[in-house]
Length: 524
Image (cartoon, rainbow, N blue to C red; front, side):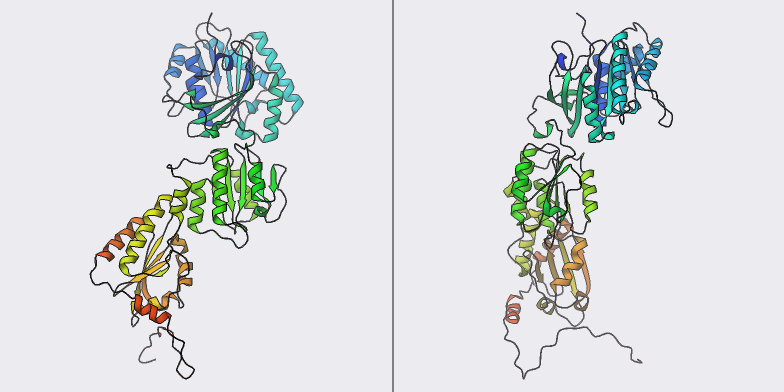
């Protein structure tokens, strides 16, 4: 018995991949890489009969076009480009008939053609259910009367949820129906609604696919990855009410939940939905644990967004922790609700990247600042900052080292006395000439705001110049040079004495804060 033409996807049984004569099959997919692999690698390698393909795609690496070149050279494969988008295109039955007339250009047997029509959505009246049903029925009758096999490839990215559901409903009488989705780098979910192949009809099944070294599709052997499950919830959004600032659901696809435990329970079984959390009234650790739990139970295709709400702002180390534990994006409070909704929609095709294996406790430890704050002696400062930089760089936290050159007439100790370090992890020290400030989890964009809160006087009144470094290697180099010096002073006793000095008596003149007088010309 001759082998039936098939999709050629390795590892799929013939009952789920073979194409019977007179059958119309529909594959809806959202991944260009998957469609290219199917068109230019799998189908040419698996089919030795006459095949006519209409597609505007071109093969791209890593697809090995060896079988494609052989089929074209032997004359058993004809590749055609569709009419330009600006010109009117025929209905599906007329398009199939037009393609079949090109069989005279093929060599050898011309019966039982395999006709492959890419971007089939362009030939179907998707806005008219009755017309869609009629065209698919006519296409099935045409294929059965001629004995040809028809494979329709539709780009599901161009179809909204309602249109895609309609297409699936009207295609239930086709010989086969499958839906493919990207599930990671060169990984795909292949969901079969039904398939009439070689043997008994194949019921609804799901497979995990990947591309091999030749760029061809094949079934994965280890398909226990959560992200490879079939998904019907791509457009669904689960959100806390606080994340929308008390507003209503933007559309019926949004489900609002009163609190985080309720949302966590509703997200069980989600695969590719979107989740919108908020920071209002939540402790950072509880929010981080919720993000990690959602990512672990739902897989990499779940989209998790965290929105700052109210007065609760996230520090950079808290943001980086959430992003490493599983959040796709952190949305600042200044972002308008309409922009938040647009960003959630834009996240639909996102897949959470794989990071180097680190446990949640390791990530938490890397994101935390030291308990120290304020002044440390130079060598203690160098050791503490080095430890912080090396630990926090593992999860992408940016810190900044600011070197101040005190203004003329002001000593490094007097600059330090003006400091008021309140955030854990923000440290300072000084040598005989310069003052060093370490700002934990503060990138270059946040330095100005941080400096305004660190000193009682403007930095411009205390220092004549400053040097900022947010590069981890640059910070470590400065620390090494500082620690190597032998004449490092320790201002701890003087600063402690100034901090605990009793307030001036009423009879004594008040201490005048340090200020730089403006320069004046002699003839002014």
